[in-house]
Image (cartoon, rainbow, N blue to C red; front, side, top):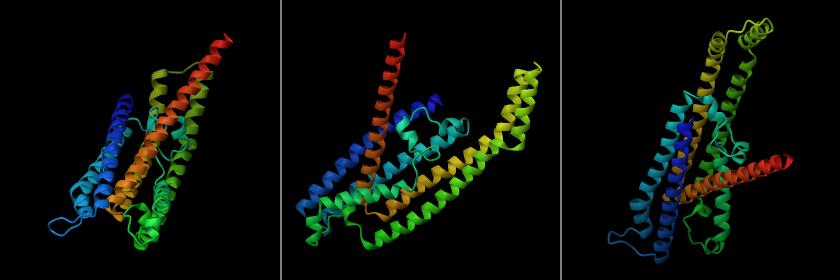
Length: 276
């Protein structure tokens, strides 16, 4: 668990580096688009930047997400419970988590929120019939595809939630009820064998933890699939704006949550010391 905590801290630093690259790429695109030049081969500057700079950058960022989920899957097999109650997340993040991470359907709320904000900011250009190329300029076809993907994602999310519910109910199955009764009786009679007790508990919990690993991997698979499919619908520059919004939301909420936890712990310690 400790090593995954370290991995996450390194990964989030890399995410911030990718965010800076995405912001720089978006600014370069906007500047060159504003000049409206054409290349020698007749392609627009926007097309050149999208092919030469934006697509490789999008691929690198997606590979970074894939790296995160591969590592998480590997560590979950040895300690799945820590993935459901991660020490590297803040209380604020915990409150909005779904099966060890962000809820896939949140992807669409993020997309619509950023689209609305960019639409509002560039409304004059859009009313003049000019294309802005950003998330405020989603086509009817793109909106239809996003809508279909959202419905499909919500269905899959619901199915995984139901699988988790069934897995959680196994904590009260006959094997658990029998074991808790046997151990309680042994404790009453002073016959507890610590080694045997631990072994029996581990044997009984093992299939339940394996079930949690499977549910977590399905949830992470849906998170990654949703992200990739949204990016497939968007143009490269729209994908860049979307990934900027996703990284900003993740990094700032993580940062705010950690600061709030630190303040709360400080107040708690101060209150405790004053009582003494």
